[in-house]
Length: 409
Ligand code: LLP
Image 1 (cartoon, rainbow, N blue to C red):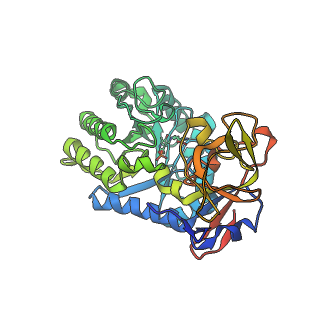
Image 2: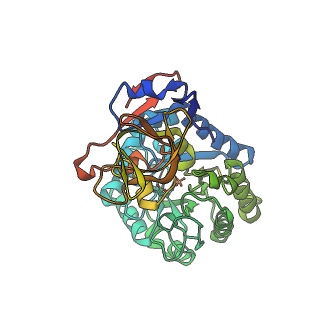
Image 3: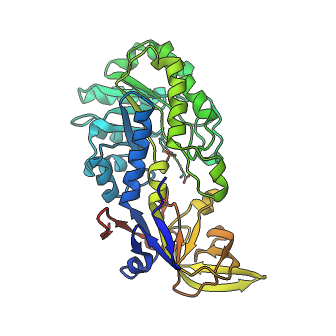
């Protein structure tokens, strides 16, 4: 996977532009995205699916990872669809030029209004239904609007994805999806189907997956259920979740899009695709497309020594970027300094919580006020999870375009 940051003679470059030159244009903190990296990652993922001979892959980018309008427009031009979880994301996807016929709507809490919006005009590609109660609501809204809703069951395959417990979603005790027996029951309940049509099945077992054992099992379960249902299906949707290597120690466990496609292909072929035809295999990747395309740029306010420890206090905080505070996630820290003497440092923000910390125990050069600090791989679940906690402003977002222009979005 591409990374846009390089270090040359003590200067950080983002794509081909010196980071200092970008930071001179607007105050820190801000998010910085590389259009080039995003599109390369998208193409790489799509080509991996095509090379694995999977039926007409449709890549529905998960907007929750990064709903930046400039970047979405570029993905739309490449032919991407969208995986959405709210009316807000539906509006953002369509405003960005993503065709409604390439939108899948997941989530356990779709409201009446959101269902109506999904059905208006040209209906969306699929409501990925997560309960019988939701199916009932979609059917009744479609009836009132004199429409037929396209739905897929989000199947809960009861597998344990090895990832952070907050982002594992495919086990029996989780709120997501329908269990096999409930799907089979729903199919027998005629009253649920007057204004909906079953067009597919979907699964999504979790995020930041680096071990693909559970993915393989989920694919087999999906294939077996599709076979058991014994109805023509237009698509299978394998969800998102492929992880990236954030830390140097992830290098050994990280799986490439090609590895991932092999696991999907092998397990779906065996259980379903060898003797069934579908129009599309749908994917809902977020992180693997956008994480590496983004950096968070912040400046040193001051350093502080306390209890024998060096704290580097920066102007960005956990409200701007929360992954490290919320999940204890590791992100590389890069600084705009010549290599030389290094000291053990904690990089922390100004927010009044101890968890407001981007990194602990990193060996960094001694830093001074106004030095730039770059938190890497934040193009997924970065700005999209930002808040205004402590009455701070939301950070700005900047894109380095394919032609090397700096655009504030
Ligand atoms: N599809 C569904 C139904 C999802 O719930 C998600 C993510 C995705 C696709 C995209 O997953 P990805 O390819 O990005 O792993 N805030 C957390 C991640 C939460 C993921 C939620 N669902 C983090 O920062 O790690």
